[in-house]
Length: 310
Length: 304
Image (cartoon, rainbow over all chains, first blue to last red; front, side):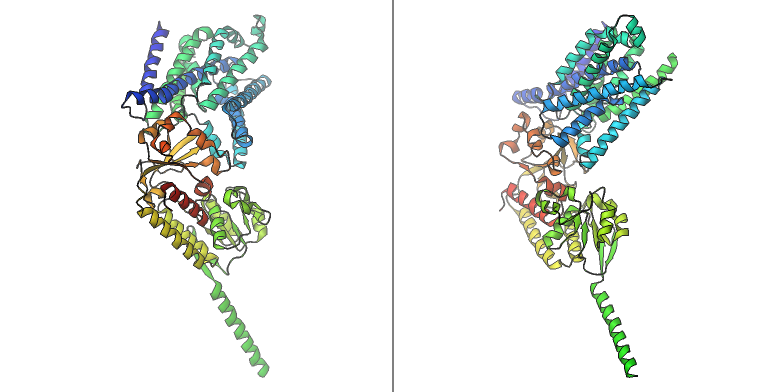
C-alpha cells in the first residue's frame, strides 16, 4: 500500500516534469511535437536513469559488502569515461552502439578490478573500502585528465560525461530501457545478492554459487554504468544515498527493499532534474551539479542519523 | 699629435654611430601585460598564440617556432619541418624555446599565463584579446604586432579594408535578421549573447540578438532544443568546438539533425550557418581569421 502511494507520488513528479520546459505551447500541433519529441523522452530518461542508478548502487554495495560505495566512487564510471575518451581520440564519429559497447566493457574492467583490489587488501575498518574506492577512482580520473590534456580534449571529455538531460530527444534515450530490464533481472536474482552480501564463506556454506553471483552482479553494475554514462552522463550520489535511506527504513532484505530503492531513486533524480531546469530558467544547470549538492546534504544527514542508531 | 686626433675622431664617430644605431632601432612595445623594449627588429620569433602566427604571416613577417600541435586547418603549413615545435599552449617546451635563442616571444590567449616565464628567456610581448571591445582590442593588438616587426604600412592597409567591410555589414539593409550564436561541444549546446566571447557579432556588426541576456561566460549558457524552439531565431550561427580542435567535423550537424530543429525558421530558410571553428574558436583575432569570419558573416547575410 505504501509502495502504491509512493508510486503515485512519483507519477505526480513525472507529470510535473512533463509540464516544465522552455517552449510555449499554443496549438495542439505544437503540443504534440514538443511533448512527444522532447518532454516525454526526457521524463522517461530521467525515470529510467534514477531507477537503474540506485539499483546499480545497491548491487555494488552487496558485492563490496559495504554501504559506502557506489559505481561513481569506485572507479566503475571513471572507466566508462576512459572508454569514451579512447573513442573521442581514435574514432570520434563512432555510432552510439559502439560507444555503448566500449563504455560497458570498460566499466566491466573497472568494477572487476575494484572488487579484485578489495579481495587483496586487509580490511581493518569499514571505511577502508570506500576510501580505497575513492582513491582508485581518483587514479583513473587522473589518467583520463592526463590523456585528455595531451590531446586537448579536457573540456570535451568532461562536458561529454557531465550528467545532463538537456539534449534528450525521441530517439536518443531508448537504450536506457536496457538498463531498466537489467533492474528487473536484478530483482529476480535479489536473494542471491542478499546471500553474497553475507560474505564469501557464509554464502558458500548456504549453497550459493558465489563466483557466478559476483560475475552477474558486476555485469549488472557495469552495463548500467556504461549505458547511463553514454546517454545521460555521470550523476553522482544516487547509488550511494538511495540504498542507505532505504536500508535505514526497511532493512537489508534485497527482494523487499529493491522496489523502494527504485522508487526513491526515481523520485530523487526527477526532483533534481526539475530543479536543474528551473534554477537558471530558461537556461539549464547540469543535473549532476544539482544532484551533487542535494546528494551530499542527504549523505551528511544519513551519516549523523547512523550514529544515533549505533 | 696627428695620430691622437685621428684616434679621437674614430672613437667619437664610433660612439656617435652606436648611439645612432641604438636610437634608430630601440623600440618600446606596449601590450596587455606591460612594456617591452626591443633593441632591433626581431627576426627570430617564437609565437605561442595562433592569432599572432596568423597576423605575422599575413603581414609577411617570418616566425621561427610555434605550438605545432595546434597548427592545422588554414595554418597547416606551420606544422611543417621548417618550423620549430614550441610545445603546446598550456605546456610550452621551455628547453627548445630557450635553445632557439629567440629575439622575440609572443604569448596570448591560451598561453598568456606563460608571459612571466617567457620574459626570462627573451623579450616577450603579450597579444591577448579578451572581453569587452573585441574589435578595438583586435585593431590595437594588430597594430602592436605590426609595430614590433616593422610592418605598420601593411597592417594599416589591411585594417582599413576590414573596417570598411565591417561598416558595410553594419549599415547593410540585408542585416535585418535576428540571430543566435551557439557553440556545440561534447554533444551539448550553449548559447552566446551580446558582451560574450562571440558577442562582437551583435555588439560590433549590429546583428540583432534574439536573446539579450545570455550570461557572458567562456563557454556560454547551456540550452535545450526547446529553448531553440521558443526563441526561434531567424539565423543560427553554429560553432562546432569539437571540429575546431580537430575532432569529428560532423558532430554539430548530427546533433542539430532532429525533428525539433527541423521546425525552426532558420532550418526551413536554410539559415543555420556552420562556422569555421578553427578561425572563430582557435585563432579568433588573427588578420586572416578575421577575414574568414567576416566572409562567413557576409555570405550568411547575402552581402557581397
